[in-house]
Amino acid sequence: MQFGSLNGPAHELRVGAWIDGDGNPMEKPLQLADLGDGYKIIYCFQHWCPGCHSRGFPTLKYLHDNLKDKGFSFAVIQTVFEGSEVNTFDKLRVNQEQYSLKIPFGHDVPAKGERHPSFMEDYVSGGTPWFTVIDPQGDVVYADFRIDPARFMNALGADDVAFSDA
Image (cartoon, rainbow, N blue to C red; front, side):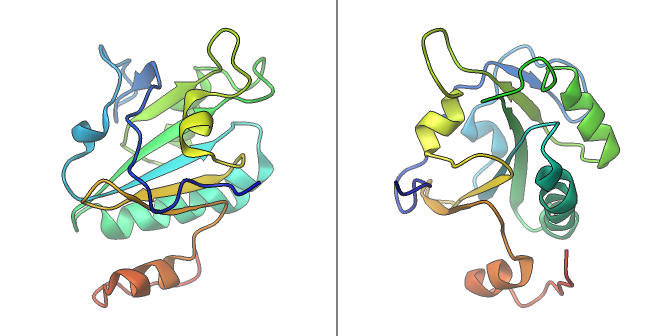
C-alpha cells in the first residue's frame, strides 16, 4: 500500500473539534481556506506517540518559527486511530503549550463505523508523526512520516532561510 495522497488535490478537512491558537474551542471546524492562500503544513500526531515528541513536534516548531512570516500557515491534528483513552481532546492544549505553537489544533476520531479518523482516510496517511504539505494551488506536494527542513526549503527554492538540524 502506498501512503500519502501526493500530487492530487487536497481534500477539505472534516475534523470536527478544534482549538484556536490561544487554546479556545473554535465555534466552527477549521477549513483549508481559513489557512490562507499560501503553503499549508498540516502535522498529525498522537499525544502518546514517542516519535511525535522526539522528532515531529521539534521539526514542526522549527518550520513554524522560520516560515510563519513567509506565507506559510500551519495546523495540527491529533489523529486518534488507537489509544482513545489517552489521546483525548484535552491533550491538544497540553501539546500546544508544551511546544509554544499558537496555531489551530484539531481532534480527529473515527466516525461511527469508520476504522480511521477522517484525515487518515482522506489523505491516506500512514500513522504518526505525519507531515502533509499543500501548495498554493491546493495540491498535496509532500506527505510522509518525516520532513527534512533543509531539503524541503531547497525543493521550494527558498534560499533565504538557514536551517540547522531540527
